[in-house]
Image (cartoon, rainbow, N blue to C red; front, side):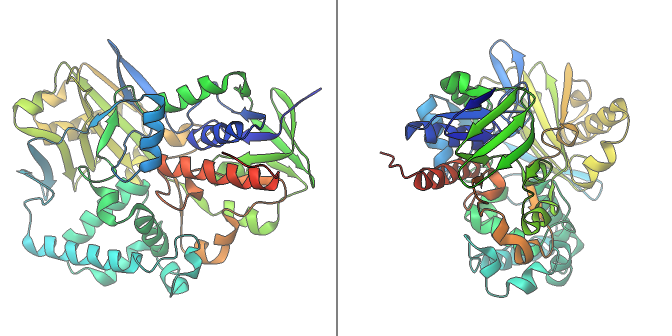
Length: 454
């Protein structure tokens, strides 16, 4: 026997839950089918005790992420600024230095070279057609090169290339050689600028949530109640002109429309009957997930603050290339956050957990001194090992994908619509973009079913 609803949503991440909430607001019956035993997708939090939380998945909110801010306000989720007081640390050419503001104390020639490259990125990004990047002037040429090859031709110093490589790793959890130049430009335009992508104050890393970003999908799911079905991995989607049936581990579900709100690479692993057009399947074969291990060391207190340090750091040596102070709002306990990204995550993700921990703690100790070498706790989240994520932060497009397959990314196929952070036009890849994608897909379904939403 099948369970019936107007719309079936695959995935209980922020995109799927936002879509379901929007649909219910239009008076439609929905069922959200989630493979995991929890909601949230790539949002996940961990308790530190005493009511304190840290996110081991996505966590930040920037000042122009208006959809995320509106949802947080609606749900009563409080936020606070990422700690950024004091001096930042940078490990550069074997030495650790301190600096204030956004400009590290390294060679002026390197800084000028980096600045001119960023300005070129910004200029090129302004030409991107956000809704249809493949229509951007010169799109084929931009999409036929990696960001690595562009860096070789547009920077003069190895130092500038290193700084921009770190930026790419921090944004996509991938290497410059993995990502199309057109995708970098699209992402820059989607966020409103390169500085918005990499910045803390005024940028995408500006604010955190008191109870963790993962509290948002938890509350959305609570409001949807029994319409969220957990431990229901989707095995097959049978779709016809006005009907869709989804077969899961929790039984069969039938609806008039479906919204698949999971990363494209995972959507491509579902069996479809009839099979999806080759154009769509070829796209999902080419959108890879980033590789990241999010690592946190916990201390009795954030001792680095008393030493005049912000906890924000860069390292050209690694394996952590960027770090943050990830302590709770009241500063107890102290938490240092570091990311293993791209090649570092691929390499260390295959070694013994103890060896990986030692490499991470050693990097914290080089940046913040011997007290960082003895945390009272340590934990990590390897997102590539998650069977229903297979990587983070987001799916990215390599050379040729936008111009060859881009139109397939958002286009519905019969009764099936697509959502997820990868499909967003603005703040693609971020929580704000996930919410946008959910609303966009829901509105398309509402229009198809001939309903009006107030």
